[in-house]
Image 1 (cartoon, rainbow, N blue to C red):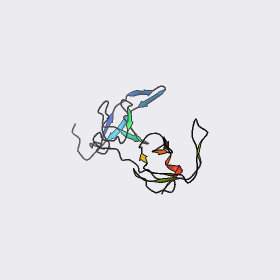
Image 2 (image 1 turned 30 degrees about the vertical axis):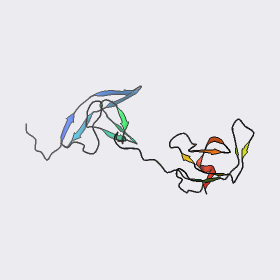
Image 3 (image 1 turned 180 degrees about the vertical axis):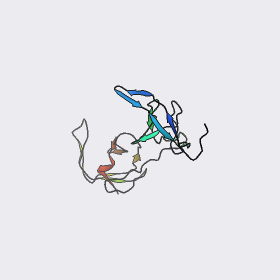
Image 4 (image 1 turned 90 degrees about the horizontal axis):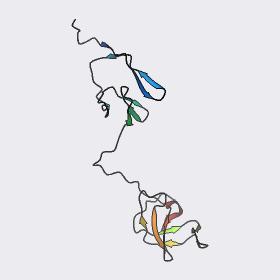
Length: 151
């Protein structure tokens, strides 16, 4: 029996797959129009081209593998977000800033007063929420960018 190319073919694949504890999927029948899904990548586990999107994940209905839709390429450097002060001004290494709020130092009874000027800051990307390294009164410390303003 020969089928014309303009009519879709109904594939019968009655297969029940377990995709987790208490979760099964019945692939059942699906309509195949002869075209491969060009927009979504194949499953990295079983190389199936039947992948679909579920929120931010891609899912393979055959093996149940889930993976991130857009993984960063290994050769591309990650884009670093600019560090800004409390008022939105972009900070750079070597800038001078002014403290806008009294800061108590951990393990000490001293307080850094409002208006203290700090020169020669160093920015630290991706290390917690303290993203500025500096020296105040001879003591090296880290500050949050939300408690300073560009001088």
